[in-house]
Length: 254
Image 1 (cartoon, rainbow, N blue to C red):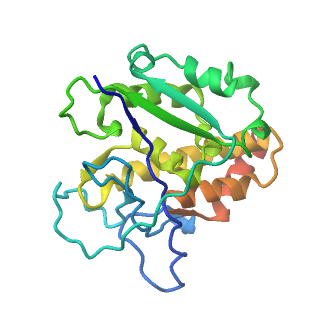
Image 2 (cartoon, rainbow, N blue to C red):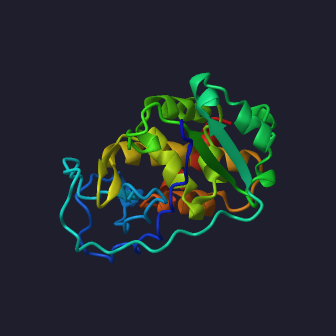
């Protein structure tokens, strides 16, 4: 049984915020401009030769896409950026996935307990994943994010380390790959993985809340900017008003 190693390519930088007075995507927004969906180009293709895989946000909310989309006029993705030098590399295989075993992650990163993690140890080096998953059927060309057992492993990982996205190697595609494991999506031959827009919106908001509070708790500089950048990598802009509400709410409960 052959072993397949797949690394998802990065999302490209998003387009700038829409100018004042212009219309943006029809996806619903939170009030007061707290949360804005941004159009993002399609991500770079995967290394696997059988299927051109990418990650894209679908701002039109069109979640009924044909697997074989013949429209080839879309902008081609640029080559992916390589993994960050010296990053923590987490390697998981069939055995770890089958047993929901998080020890490969804990051994690679040293995160034995979520409460003992110091963000400073990971914000510069970053974290990435290599998934060595042997398919039972060599003719099974599903992408790794389509295997329920792999997704369940990431669900457990995310439940234990909910702020993990802020530490991932974003520009090497790890944030997009991580989101694909947790957010409902659809496969398209040209666009690759197309996220359900409402589900992605909820995922981004949850991670902003969690990561912002976690960074502030550890007195990490610029927590607002860091979480804004994280949201931007997935195609969303976060307004300062949201952070003001979070801070005011925290003060009211002190």
